[in-house]
Length: 328
Image 1 (tube, helix red, strand yellow):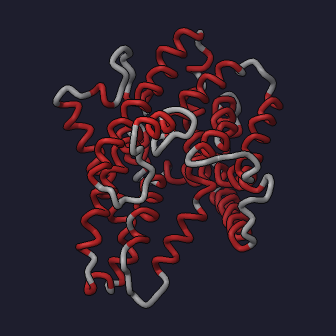
Image 2 (cartoon, one colour):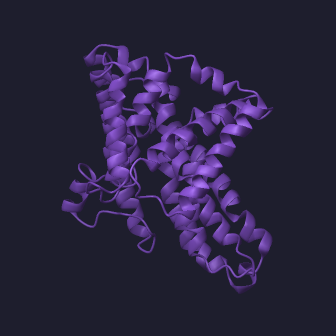
């Protein structure tokens, strides 16, 4: 949901001509930036938790059931996005404009679906280093700090590949540790303290323009993960917990389908948000949430439709019967 909200906010909402007299659009832009240290670090930590048992299996099974299916989905959906997004040339996203650019996106500088390529690579790294001591994670942590500080070339989404390895490896190892479970069951005052610590740190990060400071982003990522896990534990104990957990098991179709839908929304929203609509404060305040919810629901509906007509190969490699939970 946070990933979809980010794309709705940055690629659609902030490009519209809102004129409500209060800085509500600026608040949404700032909020989306403050959540940067939460979104992908938490996403990869969770992915590592789910992959923990997989990386303990023999290499042939790891390749067949995890690495190859993820690489397959990455290539398949990169091709789909490249074709579909040609219909929205004004949309702010990186789309290959020729075979060479497409080859670059499929290899050294992945495009919008870089998370899938990262997962395939990270699973292989986690399997190769599963017997290494925990302190060996320091290498991945240093790589994250170096890349996030801009000390190595990181065009496009290459930075994401280098920055987030440490969080996946941490998740794969954290599955063996009781601390994660304890944090997800923490008392409200502990949760409030962890979230407050992240909020203060993120506020200072923005106020001091410290994004390029060495080690700042990994530290923020760790605080964001702690806050996210604690908050998720609270959410899981509310009446909406089961529904949110069910949504969490279906992240793959949302991830691969949502960006073309956001592009379609943006192609029409510029005409819909006319002068009168642009001055509607309630709409300006709620637009990102409403569009995010609508996009997620359409993604899930499209998945059901596509699978009903026999296109399950869009969401799972044909040669292996992955469950929905595994494929997500």
